[in-house]
Image 1 (tube, rainbow, N blue to C red):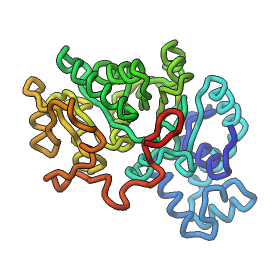
Image 2 (spheres, rainbow, N blue to C red):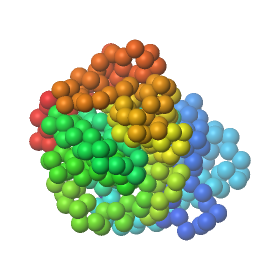
Image 3 (tube, helix red, strand yellow):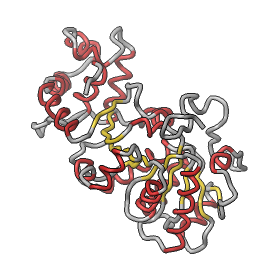
Image 4 (cartoon, helix red, strand yellow):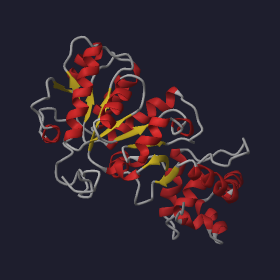
Length: 337
């Protein structure tokens, strides 16, 4: 892997890779944003200045305390260990993209702005993350009726050449991903468990090799599942899509409810909710801004997502200036819809 100086500065300062000193903490998202904003007020502008011979002057302009300088110098001095870690990851098929890179997922950066992770680790074709698709989410424990609805939705999306964005969890997530791949579609999965473990699975390897799967995480690829990571990745699923479809949700609890309500609050994309009375959270979600849906067999999903709704606080992502012209639906061979 080759990196620009800005990308390498981001990795050195923000990642846990090659970090053997437990007292040395990488920058949090908030700290990184503050550093970048402060650099913009100086003549240096970019993080790459921290890798040059003028680093002492840069820190002086940042008005860092001695402790802050020691911490930043410690992070910047681990180039050799970072290079080794990056090489080890690439041998496993895991790569890194930073927020300043052109290849970074377009909508994720556009929609989340300051909440966008400085670093993403991924396995697969990163271009899939910037193609047009839908988020499909729902409860881990799902009945046969919900499973069949999710399958039909995904099958329809695949026929329209739409990517499926999901989280790989048991239940609706995994059903949606498996269905999409079986139908010849492609999946972008934001994982909340160890990426280094997930990419060892035979079916995952095959899907990545067939250009049908992209796995992404904002955490060190060796880090195991945590509830906080599972909750945090919800925003990535929604913000990367052109519209989100909620199959089943509990009421006022669980990741599906929390993620959908966060999306409605932030107006990243429209939240379509299956209007089914058996799922406690679905009706409540609709009453709070979700868009009720039923049988979609006669609908065109792309047109449905374009349609203006009466919900003024649901973002119309297809209005002028909302979506980059670069973001277009493509077949896997690169031909545009």
